[in-house]
Length: 395
Image (cartoon, rainbow, N blue to C red; front, side, top):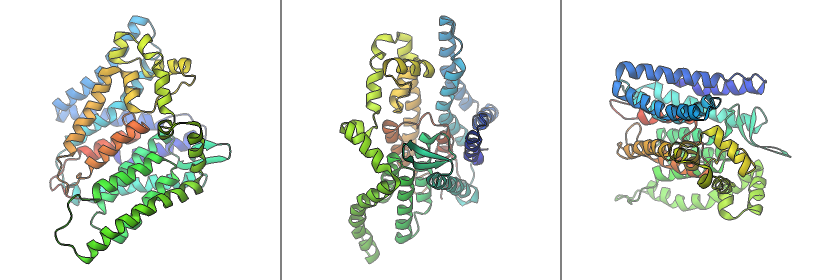
């Protein structure tokens, strides 16, 4: 089921485009989640206990608060949001508990990565030519493309994940091929009209490719490679400018830049939303709310009152803090940091030896544009690529 869930997301986007409001992608992911829990119950009771504890942590406070206030309408919506937060850790525990298998030499792993990467490419290109959804809608037409991925804000994270993994799979290829593939990834990020996608690709490739130790034996090929780095670095801003200008993203940048300071421009106004939330956070939150959060639906309602827009912050740290409290923030981000710390010690030549860089970059993106920890699209694949057990552990 893991191999097809992004395709189900696309099919769900097609149905929504046709006006059919049945979210089969959510039903599919819930079926996956139930299957993972059943497997863990049978094969790894300790991991199942951890998963059950996390589910109860996000469910029991909602029920207790509803019983105390008499408002039971929001339980389903709030718990549905909380389940998205659990897809990554539960997926990680599930895949790490599978029997060890030589995924590195098996075509299944590569097929999963390249097929999903191809699906993402196809949807970005479809969106650019006007088929499906645009990343941003404007008076002069759409900007950027996401195809039939309905959750457009989550495309950047899944694009960064699979682009970084594909880069790792071609790491033994020649310099010219990798240079062309790098340019291709950069163009895709621009066509997606996402600065976080472009920044993510640049950072991941830099982390994976640039070594702090200068080679002892310097061949002509290595010399040309290192001489090409400053040339490539100076050409990147020009390529970005041309791409941004032709896709219409320059107008979006200009709109924000002319009306905002530098920090507000970089965060696309999300810091102002934090300020809006802080108008009611110190005064309207009870001790219970500080610990367990206000709930996603209640928080959106308060944002509509105090900020004028009923919208999430889209900075994961603050969304977790306001919606799930300090305990929810500690659980979700603490779990992610543990997995990040674990990935730092995976052998760099191993099958998942690149995940430390991707995990770091995704953490950075979570503070800039959000939609990392609460992304159902990203969580399953991120859990798969982090938790995959192997025998030879070599891609």
